[in-house]
Length: 173
Image (cartoon, rainbow, N blue to C red; front, side, top):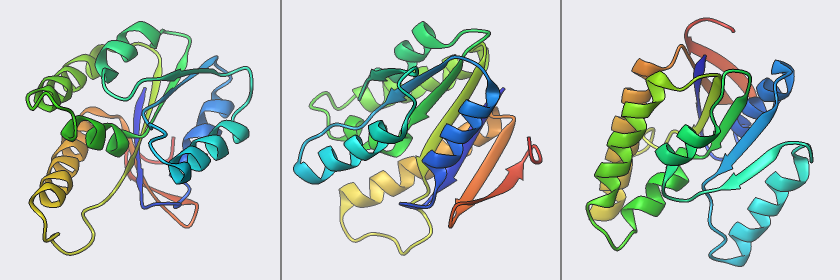
């Protein structure tokens, strides 16, 4: 079963994914896409690490998400990807301009065939005004298109606000 968990910054989306993974009773692999490029992001990463159970495997992969999922998804395993918008930002900032499209296409191609449980966490960034800068507009557009494509593929989609999930697709699992 694949789930997409969307929400704003500090909405509780990661905590929901982590709780759902813990409740699954399956071994968990946590695929982290963040990069500690400054002290504030390093602190965010440390906060996430501190609340995860030590028995969970953690894989840090900022770019090659589809390949990483192929390696770690398994029938009796739960995989959390946190988060897709950080991954998207990493790819849009990559020196190889074509890498974003290749990685996005690879993710959308591999996801339907992945075994086990996959929980995808992402920031919903399309609720505000259209950004002024070209890169910001592209980021918002690409995130929206990615979320739509993933929502079509996932059995369950949640929107998290103030720590409360609203199930948009698939009912409450």
